[in-house]
Length: 266
Length: 281
Image 1: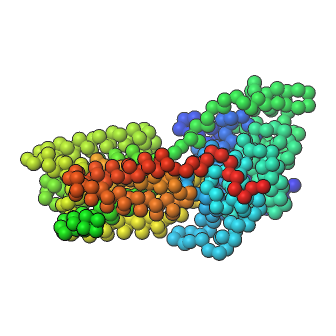
Image 2: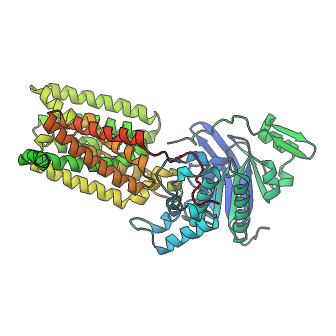
Image 3: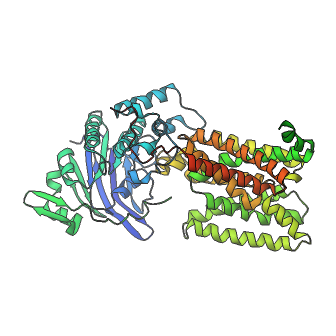
């Protein structure tokens, strides 16, 4: 599966991330090959968002190293796009759907330059791809949950990344949006994008992803879903919130999960 | 009506006062959009009070009050930025400590002056009728500088305000931009000193912007409308103070508040929480 000639697209080497004295993730080592579609699974507070934020350089590493295309973090600028959790966005902010998607072009634009025709074309294409062209002029506060998710996906597309990180995109969206997102992920994978999606839906992770990272403040298991999800590993990750029934496992999702420290900044 | 409008303009000090008020009204209202969107209202208020020692020292040394304020404001902006970066105590606590300390220091310094009651009133509530031509130039120059900076850094300020996570992933210098914004806020507050004073500048930052936010869905539109409301409030407030003979800074703020209440009560509810329906089958 991995081409030995090429460095892995994403390489984590003994990565530890901490907020003050609280260890959010410790000693994670794994490689994600080019074009993989990976689900990141774990209970609330397991460090899923922490992992993503560390990968985009938002959180400093306590120890360990992250390599993208074999180069240390920070060498690539446009490479990684991150779709945040919906709760992290101020939906009353006076921006339209088109404004938000245009932000995906800002890195390319650089300082003091205004969007040009090619940027407007990229925005229009991204909107079209997420089937929200008719919402371009709408204020983001007027959207439904599924539409909001599509806006942030469209912005990630406008960034033209190699690696796409999505934090809980399936939480609180309608079935149509969930399918649209999954279909898009499949499409993007055929274009060679590496995709990492956090979720606590074990069934979705099993049926729609080829690899799973199971986290609970450390790496519990990593590999194909059928090998990652064993009663032992799932119990290690989810503790008593899991019910193992013969062939299927059910995770109690409505538990009031503790907020991951540091995610509620600003 | 025309006569009613023109009568105050017969006085040079009124002409200068009107010009200064309008410039400050527009500047505060535009900068205020970020103050409202980034929840910096308390910070703005604190910063305004924290420049009092700078003004006092300038007064004692018989220097230019605005320059004294300018030095103090920039120092305070950098101080707050530095303290909040350390993250040992919460930002609003740090602001609270800094601001009361600076205010007290300022009052101690001013109270050592004989005529302190009058001077303190001017600093706290503005003295728009005492605007000198050089004040006017300083106000205009700083105002243009601040507005140009906001225009030039529009994309960057938008991203760090709306989505700091994206700002970090696209490698914007978030801390430097935040500090730049604090300095622009500090400059705005200094310029406002003459017309509304340190006690009321927070209202001029927050009220027009909050009003505009109720009526617009894009930031550029919000800034334009907010600036318009700021200019209108300043003009009518000053006329009000001329004819009713009340303190001008307070009159300006009251007009701005009246506009806000009017919009808040009459605003056609756009159903912000409801799913967007237009154009969907």
